[in-house]
Amino acid sequence: MFDFFKKKKTPELIIGSPVKGKTVPLSSVNDPTFSEGMLGKGAAILPSEGKIYAPADGTIETLFDTLHAFSLSTADGVEVLVHVGLDTVKMDGDGFTGHVHSGDAVKKGDLVLEVDLDKVKAAGYDTSTLVVICNTDDYGDVRGLDNKEVQPGDDVIVITK
Image (cartoon, rainbow, N blue to C red; front, side, top):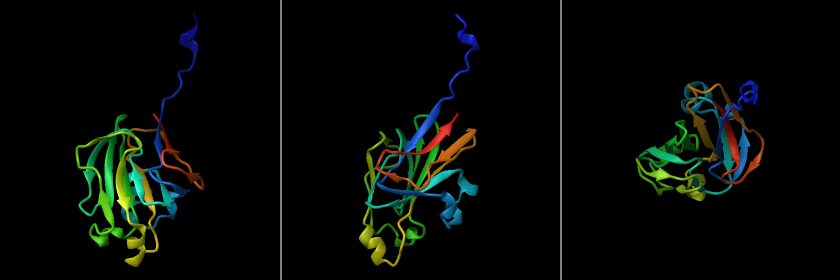
């Protein structure tokens, strides 16, 4: 009867980890191109395997030519950039295998990229940090979960609309 007095629960969008690994603060990522100030709040993950899954339902907007990153428009209208490594773009795609194309619809958990971590290491890169970044222009609160061991699909970013 008095439902209109109840405060409505704020909807949240959860973005899952696309890999198995450990989350770290995005501020620890030194690449300014993918910094929090440039593209919004997000999370960095140190992956322990090279399989990268879609972190949410949506459409692949761009799969970078070097296969080191992809952008996703989620079903909730959030732009998400998933970028592998800090300098691995210099590998020109060697070591990365893409399983999707621009315009492909994906479900959370679909295999999107595979990274040959041995090739990345052999190329002289001592990091294979995965950076998940959101364009947060239309959202009031974004929380990345830091210092947590995660499996593919575990919550790493919570966006409150």
